[in-house]
Length: 160
Image (cartoon, rainbow, N blue to C red; front, side, top):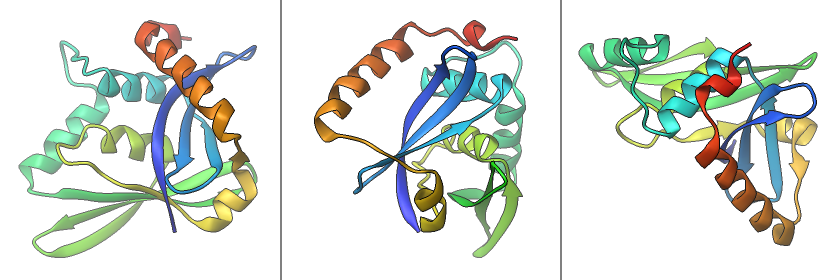
């Protein structure tokens, strides 16, 4: 497995389709995953530390896990099949580890809400198939542009 870093969420132009963007920690590839607007909003809210008047679904699930003393251990993007990414969420409770199937976007939305950092991994075969190489010099400029985008984006930008 290859550890990834969450770069953020952006909107693909001209389709206005949200993408969660991950990058290899020690590598040269990005992993872009198209996601739905509700999941994009959930991730952006958490990244920006925004609170809603009522809990969103991912907030509710995080509260349930906390109340049940369940710790989110890691997110693993396990496969890419016919254009669809699959993931698993690994939990630990009372010393026992459990894995459940998840969409990557939901798993990431939970991970960014955890009180302790939750690592995100992808199977090497997923990055081999869908990873996009990047140039390190161009990368810094693109990351800065992306940070500026995140500072200005509003969850309403993801509404359909």
